[in-house]
Amino acid sequence: MESIREFIQENKTYKSYCISYKYDSILNDIYQYVSDGDDYILFADDANRIDHFNQLIAYYQSKQFGKLKILITARDYAYSDLYLNCPAELTEVIKLKKLSDNQLIDIVKGEPFGITNPNYQDVITRISDGNPRLAVMLSRLAVEKQDIAVLSDVSNLFETYFNTFIKDQKELANPINIKSLGVISFFNAINIRNKERLLEILKNFDIPYEDFLEAVQKLNSFEVVGINYDYVKISEQNLSTFFFYLAFIKNKQLSFGTLLTHYYADYMSRFSDCIIPANNTFGSEKVMDVVLPDLKKHFDTIYDDSERSYKFLSIFWFYLRSETLEYLYNEINTYSEHESINTKRMILEKKSTLSGKDQTLELL
Image (cartoon, rainbow, N blue to C red; front, side, top):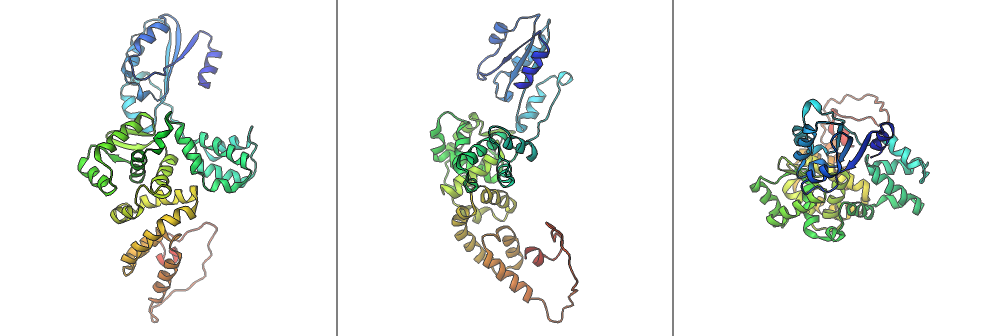
């Protein structure tokens, strides 16, 4: 919007319009407001959600007199389909990256926040993860409370952020919506056309198939999730972290034990991707209180298998500290007294790793 404003200030012949109603024919409005022979810029945010987007392209290609520029935006998941509908020889693509930490810090330390404390800045940039709207909300909270501790659990702030997507705030309290979002957040993307696989997942979490599909369509209309090539995915990573936390940890509407039992073996990396951000964003104690009993129970079933224990503890050592130390003690004691051990002085630089070295040392 700001770019359009600046462009029009420099190019006085242009007029601008925004397309906001996306679920009906747009040709009538175009013919009403756009006169052939004049110069225009038309702006459509989330253009993939315009039901009659092809009408806009057809008008662009048919305009005989005057200049017409169309500026559209689309999320990554919708880019391919949208691009195919645009005339390639006339289309210029500008890919926007999420804001860097330095850019977020410029927002945080500027007016009206004036947050110059590096500790506050680090927490805000980590949680907001390139999202300026979240950075602003976190900055307001920090200025209001004057206490960095309030940023250790920002679940209420995320609920407020979620409600910016929808008008009916009761949707956040709808169990089927939260359970559906929790499942999607863990698997990252779910193929809604693979009915056999989907039914298996939903059965494990007591989610009716039709209710899930209805929730997905509703959440898609709110732009909380996106559907691309039959895969449904939560639109923003920090929202995905929030919904995992909300469904599995805070509300306990989904069983973490069930998740561990059925999906740990095939989705180890997803546990890291979900648990660690939730731990860092919403507070380790809240996460630990819920996951610890299930982690202990699962670890007991693999205790005698050294390799499986190592992989499990590599992910969950933070919660299973005593078990991790016991495992390391036992592993070290398995070295034979007659085994040749090459001892040498090791100098480890700050933040260095032992990747590719002895796994016992790496875990230690």
